[in-house]
Length: 271
Ligand SMILES: O=C(O)c1cc(=O)[nH]c(=O)n1[C@@H]1O[C@H](COP(=O)(O)O)[C@@H](O)[C@H]1O
Image 1 (cartoon, protein in one colour):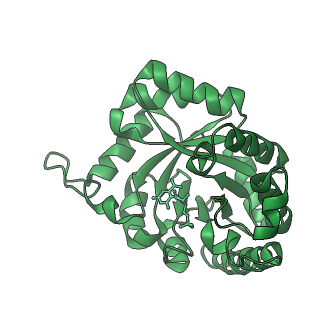
Image 2: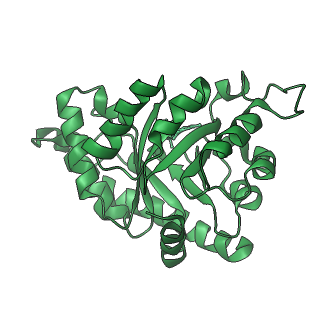
């Protein structure tokens, strides 16, 4: 999916919501455990319920690979079930020496046909560039939502005066254009988006942390939105586990709709 196509979907849906499929067998409603593939059965109902309100889905790969071959099967079925209009993100946080990154890229772009993958950039150029496939996206971790996101990412480089995360963002833009490179910035770090936009005005940002982590959607839009929206805001637990009863899909739909409505107002205000 191109940047223009993604922006087109955002305008059409009046939404920049990404629904996170962090599907945990210990958290899904008990009645689904009788299904042959409970994880896929859950995801299918979540996708059916939320597709009108979001533009993207992000399965977090840890939840699937932790289940072995059954998890990989459920992931593949889930990916195939997602509407093609929705931007798919393999949240795998990969990155290794070149020939190993090549294999990770094959796993998620050739074997599985994801639109994008999250990548940890710590190992540098040869760990990131193998993910630069034509028509696919690399989503590089910049300033993450978690507490540990403050351990290294805000260290100031005395040579450049920048935060480490800004230098990482600048360097990655030498390797890839805004047509194929996004960055991750936590919704818990809304004000840091000013520093993010200083060094990456044109890139799309994947912004997780709304909902369960208490991120600030209003602040994210205020500081992070650019002329093409430039945001995909993810919520996982806040949507998919809003209810653990038989009404889980209806309640997930309402949560997704609530976020879409807020996003619609924000698009009107800032775009
Ligand atoms: O790369 C990510 O998606 C990510 C980066 C980050 O800084 N923080 C973060 O929470 N995430 C992911 O986003 C999702 C957030 O889930 P919830 O907190 O349940 O909405 C999880 O899959 C996390 O792994």
